[in-house]
Image 1 (cartoon, rainbow, N blue to C red):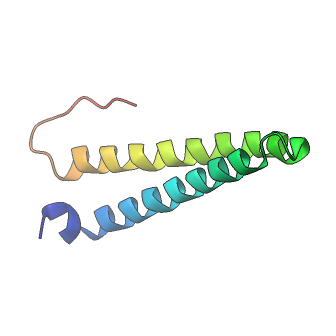
Image 2 (image 1 turned 120 degrees about the vertical axis):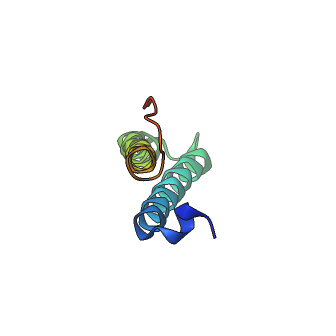
Length: 80
């Protein structure tokens, strides 16, 4: 077992990231499906996709911050 899988905070953060990624991908697939057929729904999905991408990015950043703060011995440069 790695230290990331033995850390409950890591497990929770990865689950959050997984959920956010699935949501983002589902919205992208829906938009692809309605492209050229349902113009209104296609446009309605744009802000939802942007929000889902932001949630995914925030979840990934949360993982990076946690890993740097709790699991790495030396300071690491945090990048978005």
